[in-house]
Length: 495
Image (cartoon, rainbow, N blue to C red; front, side, top):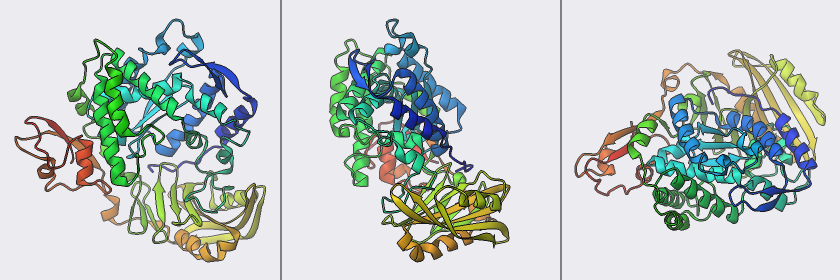
């Protein structure tokens, strides 16, 4: 969370307009060449993706490494050119649409695509890949989703109404899955809601076939990707999930580890390029795990070294940090809080703007002080489609920004959580302790393994980043923790 940003509702409103106007159309699937029913024209897909892309960047943050981004873009461009995107028979509106490939600043092992040519990989995923061939298959898979028009197809299958796709993009989002309401929680916009429109297994297998084909045509040995899917399976087993966060609607990673080589075997002669050395050189120095410079939790305190503030949140609450918000949720979903930036220039103006929103009923409001900072608190209720929500919002002027700490719960639960909302906001203070201000991220180091070494022996004396275990370092290297490493092999370790 290098800098909190307020989210815009324009993309959500645009999307609802598109959904309302898209009564269904016949699309061409540019992976198979066949016609299929879709909810959007290509122009609408591009418009939707363009708007949602801004929210994705705000939500996750773009990883600040121009050289790494340029490398991913170069591999992606080589793969893209082997697809129908470069086929003269493909309509000009497709061939003239620029594709964008972004590295997101997230430790989660994930990759996904938005319609219209927007494709994302996380730095977390890059750390778990071993070579350029594996990256090429992942990028090819996402290109397959875009050219296969899978978002449009899935929207049409769902027979979406005006609010069926992304009503929550306008109404907001619920953290924790409880009975808290959505109305004034301006978080989780169009892009994130769009990602919940999951593809069917058929579309995933089609994208797998496309990813293998595109990578092979680009000269890569696509069978290398099977080792990555074994890593995904191991990650899933460690987390207690059948599959990890990466594309959870995909066929089981274990199944894919077997089918990828079968798909690649269709191409004779197949690609041979692996390029592990170049890939490892490009990702060396990448941040591993959470980046404490963007904010981190320790105990029940959230610290932000860059913005120089800290505050306490209720013990036992679940948290989620991003460039646009820090979320705190009661474990059963009965209450939620979020920290964001307000767009107004003063705490009082932000408080009055909230109080003036349609459907908001103010029970109390007024200026307060929070640890010497000018602040303004508004409490009351808001009406929305799913019912009423009670809220406590505290706006705090600090460091040239206005911070909003917003607590939400059901009206009959407000008396139970009001003190937690107020005490959390009341603990907001300047951060001066160098122990927290100077916290630095862990970065990936690539080294040549000595003869007879194991990852377990190489990790001795190294500090693992929070949330990363020794076993996960082994998975990251696509090997076993106690396995003897081949002499001279390059391995990835936390600095």
